[in-house]
Length: 79
Length: 192
Image (cartoon, rainbow over all chains, first blue to last red; front, top):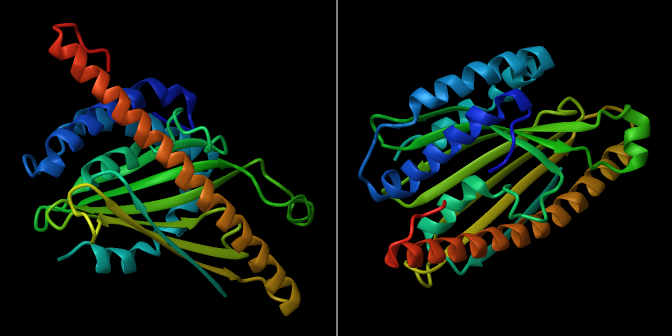
């Protein structure tokens, strides 16, 4: 799996990624689960990552990039 | 504005492609050394449609030409923001990405779609990629045009490398999975 941009988050990221991939391949795409079972691990990873993004100043750049998702959500988040 | 598009068919099922797509930039991919990190920012399943929406931040080693770095003052890393949608019922993965670095100067929006192949829906996957590149800087049309031209060229090179790298990941994954299955069949513990 790939690394995190914040090395201190690598350990929890690895655990989360492994959990996600297993859930995705074994349940989600087979139509056996509609809730993300790895949410608790994601919360831990996210807490670590959010802090790092703020420190690196990436969070403000992200907010700008997110503006474009209104269009893509409208197009791809429905049937 | 320049448009770049390409298509390709992977000799793997949609399930394999869409799963391995999440680890496209793992160490198995020897063509992606410019990708330093891939972080998931958010992820949830839409309760109405069942579509999985994921936001990721991709951190790359800067690969702009030296003359561009000289003019703009080069940071050593660049960031890409990606939002993706997986529709498991329709078997469709759509990934939309945009550059965060130098976004006031150059806008590069890419859309990638993976769907079961129209020729062999169970064994093959069609890949479609389209990118729109627009230089936003004021001033000479000639410079804008040059920046766009260089960017499209980089995009083309990266697209080819990306495909090659992903092929390796798919192959390694199938091999590892096969070996694991053999071990389990022989009563040995799995290691991955």
